Image (cartoon, rainbow over all chains, first blue to last red; front, side, top):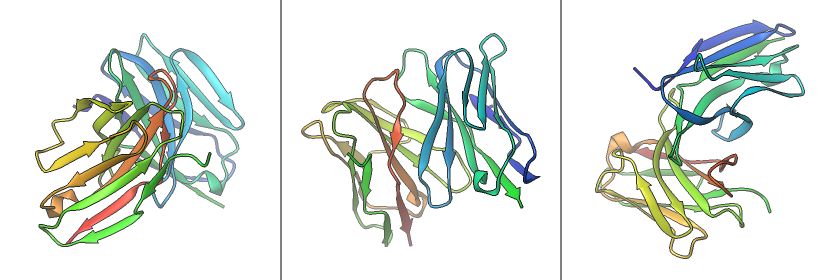
Length: 109
Length: 113
């Protein structure tokens, strides 16, 4: 079992829909990251959080430390949101990131 | 500063050849990370540097792989005697502090024929 699991692996929705991507982890962490990867490979950090909730524009990230679970929400989704969304965790006492396998999101107009 | 850069962006090589990739981090960042990503998967950690010191290496990093960061600025990742299984995207990231966000480069896509 992977230390970081994401669901769903693939998600297709219509423009305007509310999107939720889930991430569960099984290890002790110091922080959780949500990343966005567009075709061609470039990765952009969206959020880094260790508790509670963060919001940036139409994106919201939440984390429940006790349940070892995080969600990424996209409100009023748009075709330009189409990308792979990756959850990653910073392990306690370690420098590296451990990544989930990613969720491929496609928003159709 | 334009962010993390990597060179080359694409590399096609024949099995058995050696390849070297370069990463230039954001200038004031003292931490530099290498990751590998195969198709359809999330990235996997390879190694990381704090300044010029290589502090952690993954078991994925076989004897054919070596990474350096000689002056604590840019880093190189060399793969000797490449194999088809080395085909992947090699990503570099840097950060100012381990508690801070890692900034990723565009990656080097390697194809071993």
